[in-house]
Image (cartoon, rainbow, N blue to C red; front, side):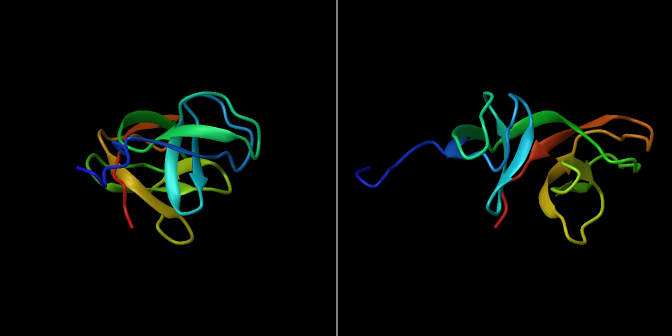
Length: 108
């Protein structure tokens, strides 16, 4: 195809703040997981598809439910208000758990 640009699972964007490899971030409206460390404002390749263990807010999250990114606290939550939908939880996580496995689902 002459109009094919790239696969789309790994997107080069701009780090909105200093990010470490494996850390989630929002670049505009797109959520990604950094594939390498990057300084704030630097180019970073973000992975936008796959399953990742991400830090979680102090809330219980049920298995196979929609989860959101709280960009202020930089954690996954089950609270939709003022947060960005990022995917689906792969397993349940208690309120005391530090992380949850999330399957990223690109959304518009």
